[in-house]
Every structure is written in C-alpha cells, then in structure tokens.
Amino acid sequence: MRNFVYLIFLCWANSYWSQIKLSIYDSSLQIPLVGASVLISPQNNICYSQLDGTAILPSNLLATDSIVISSLGYERKVFLAVHLPTKVLLSPKKYILPSTTIRPIAPRDYIQRAFDSFHANHLSKSFSQSVFYREEFIVNDQYARFQEMDLEVYQFPKKDDSRPYYISGSFPKVKQFYKKDDTILMNDIKYSLGKIVGKKLNFNYLTGYSYIKGVNMLNFIFTQLLESKDIQYKLLGIENIKGHNALHIQGKYFKDNINYTNIDVYLEENSYAVLHVAITANDENLTKQFLDFKTRTLLWLVGIKIDVKKYYSKLQFTKSREGLWVVEDFLLMLPVTIRKKKTLDMYVNIGYRMNPLLNMSAKPLGYSVYQENQHLFDSQKIHKRFSEKLGYSIPLLPAQIDRLDRMR
Image (cartoon, rainbow, N blue to C red; front, top):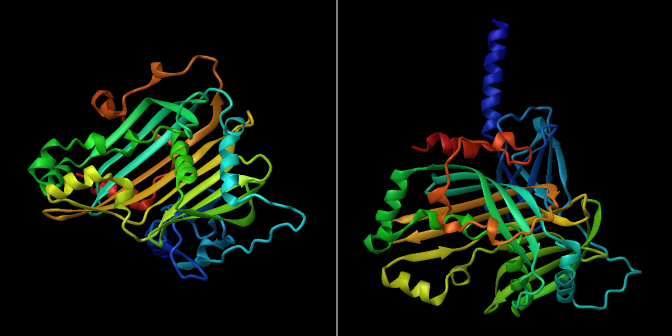
C-alpha cells in the first residue's frame, strides 16, 4: 500500500512539475523579461522566457535539479527546483567603467569598428557549418505548421559587394527535413482572409526560412544599426560574456518621439568582435517597419488589417577552435495579428542552433550549393523526426509537445 501511495505521489509530482510556469520580471521596472534563459542542470536543458516573461520548464524536472535563471545585463539567480518560486525578479547589473580606460569615441563608432573588423573576427575565410533549424507557425494557439531541418550552411566573405553593409554570403543546403501541417486550420486561414488573398496564398512562402540564410541576419542588423539616424546609442559598461570582457552598447530606436525598439549589442573589448545582439520591440505598432507602403495599401484595399507589435530576437556567438566567432544560437519570437472575417493571432517562433565544429574545406562555395528557398518544400522528401539524433538540436518543451499532440 505504501509503495502504491508513493507511486501515486510520483505521478502527481511529475504532472505538477511538467505544468509549472515560471514568470521572470525586471525587479526595478516590474516588466516581463523576454528571452531570459532558464538552464536546468545536470541535464543541461535550456529554455527561454516568452514575450509575456513566462517560461515553461521541461517535463523531466526533478526536485534536486539546479535552475539557473539569467539574462544579459542582469544578475543571475540560482534555485533548487524544489524551492523554485513561480515569479523571479532579476536585478539589473550595476556597471562601473574602469577609471583607467579612456573611451573618447561615440558609442555608434564602436558599432562601425565592429563592422570594419568583421572579416577578421567572424568570417576571414569560407567554411560550412551544420545547423539545426526549428520553426513554429502558431495560429490561435494551434499549430498550423511545425517543421525542423538539418542544414549545412555554406558561409563566405563578401568583400567586393557594392552594398555598403553587405558583409557575408550564406547558402543553405537541406540534408533532412520534417514538417507537420494542420491542413484544416490552414484552409480556415485562407477562408478568413477572403477569396482574393486566400486563393493565391501559398503557405510555403510564409515560412521564416524563406528569409533566413545563416549569418546573413548580420547584414540586416548592421544595415539597421549603421544607416538609421533614429537610433540613440549609449555605452552602459563592461560585462563578462563567456569569459570575455564585452562592451555593452544599448541603442534606442525613436520615431516621432516614440521608443519602438531597444537594441543591446555586446562587443569584445579589444577586437570589437560581436558576441551577442538582442532586439526587443516595445508594445507599439511596428507594421510600417515590416511592410512597405505598396503592400499596406493593397492589403487595405482588400480589407485586411495587419498589426505587428512586440517581438524579440537574439543572436549569440561562440568562438570556434579556428579562432572565429561564429553564430551559435538564433531566436525570434514574432506575434502578428490579422483581421478580416475573423481575428487571427499568429506567432512565428524560429530558433536555430549551429554546430561549433567548422568545415574549412577549400572547395569553392557559391550558387552550386544554393537552393531556391521558396520552392524548397515542393521538392524535399519529408523525413521522420530526427532532432534527437543531433547533439546540437534544441529540446522540445512541454508546450510544444502539447501542441504537436493536439495537431490533426
């Protein structure tokens, strides 16, 4: 009888822990922290807080596990799982610039120096890198699409490009591909958007992978940071990132006196290598930043209203044994609201993790390995899920498993 009661308790405890939600907030401003990392040891599982500051912990959490909660620019906290509160307040770090260090240049100029030294720090020669990619296309809290890819991304310097901030090239080659769609929900989305848009809508074009090609995200970031005159920069101090002292530069994007986005850039103190970039959008209407005037006009004519508000994106770098700083993790959480016949609350969650082992093959790289992204899903054979076989894949969280179980 005692063993039976103990077994019931274990089942209840496992169910309780699998459902636990953790809220992470800024202690001074009392606002949710998005993108804060929650590391569970000794499993080394990691998850991130969502746009509302909540993180759902993995289902295999044990009472004796150590939970490390951290966010760049904040003091980290460590708990045993049995003592983990439901709400954690992180305190901003107090930065003190070394009195012996003279920094006469403006913070924006540090970004320029990082761009100028990019080929020395990040991409001095061609290489390829294995990548695990995951994308969740969620509509009204249901999966419309869940997909994973095993990629080989070929990266190479672009020194002679006429575009001023185009620093690198990147071509993906898909090795394995897994996709699961809810076709009923997709047809419902097409109906909700009406005959004009819905009939021509190709969901393959909606995939975030159509717009992401390895480190080319850095081309976009540098262009935004260096060309925009509406970003005000401030040097906050020095923080230790993976054993390296990094300059923490924060940019605030203003338009019509409204602070739309905050950009945190961490540069290695001496070489100006980019170690980490995070972009957090405030809860304002950002649609104009994503859609041009022509597109917005066409959508208005067919009666579709699109709102893009708060989102979060980050790039984390790691130093390879070849001495290059390469992309290790990428994360994007993008909510979009579409209104016509009915309101569609959509989320695109994108993450990829890159293997730090580089292939420095002398083989010339270029369009011979490139696949046209928009036609990718028409030609690829869908495999069974393969992520568990990749040592650098991203673990599934309870919320993701629940959505997959509910998918038709």
